[in-house]
Every structure is written in structure tokens, then in C-alpha cells.
Length: 205
Image (cartoon, rainbow, N blue to C red):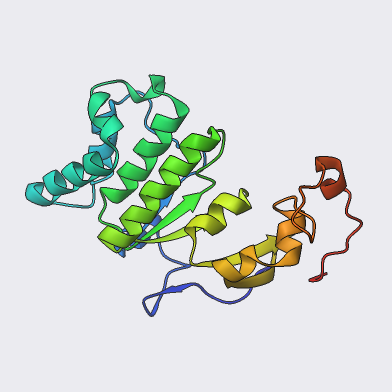
């Protein structure tokens, strides 16, 4: 059972149809970089602009996506079902940007990606936030990468928020360091087994 409501810019949205939410400027990037596998990369991007009618705007959005993800230019004619996992994640984010979003919901963008690629994609997301003024709500298990990107963070366990605050403050929190970064109070890296069997000593419990 759930209570309360979800609002965006003063409007209640939790009981609206998905297409109505999209038109308000909220676009989701689904976990795993899912795409329309039978379409080309560029056709996927154009599908993301379905709610935009003006061709000039669609063209400018496509140019913008290719600016942030130049790798997609090289594979724009490729069938998206055959591109790599990292390219799919870039495509999924790019497709979301085509809709001219005010808020992008990113669901586990680091899933299945190499650490260097995660850092590259997160850096691009940060640039988009700064340069395009597009807000992002990130759900991510990679706490170190997430807090490196976010301005404000929430720690959730078993469906409830147990800790929140500015990202810089959370990175300095002793529990975050120990249970999510694997570091002891003196900065030493703890063993994986030691972190996983911590006997419920978190200060928020």
C-alpha cells in the first residue's frame, strides 16, 4: 500500500498516462539501455522525438545528441540490436534527449558496463546537465560513481530512505565509506567479505 502523490512543476503526475508525462518533459532511460533492436541507431533516435512536430527542432536535437555522443555518428546506420552494451547505453540516453526533456530518469546506467565506460557516460551526463540545463534523477547501485555525478543523494534500503544530503557530505559519511566504498574509518580498503558481513552496525538502523 502506498500513500502520497507525485508532483512535477506543481502538477500531479502519478495518475497520468505515460505519454502525458513525457509531454510534460519527463523521459525515462530504462535499465540496460533498451532500444528498438530492429531499427537503426538513427531511427531509434528519431523515434525518441515522436512528441516533437517541428522538423527543424528534431534536426537540432539530433545534432546535439551526436555532439555529445560522437560514437553514434559512426554507427548511425547500424542495426541497434547488434551494437555493444556501451553504445546501447549512449543510444538510450541520446534517444531520451531527443524529446527535449526537462528531467531525465536514469535507471542503473552503469549496469554491465566497464568502469572506464561508466565514467565516460557519467561525465557526458554531467556535461548535459550543465550545458543543456537538463535535470537528471539517477538510480544507481554504484555509489562512488553516483555521488561523483550527483549534487544531492538519497540512500535507500528495503524501499525506504535511510540517509540523504549533499553528495559531498554523503561521500564523507563514515557509514557510506565503510558499507558502500569498502573503506575503514582510517581510509584502508576492507575485504569484500568483511563489508558484506557487517552485523548491522549502520548508524541509520
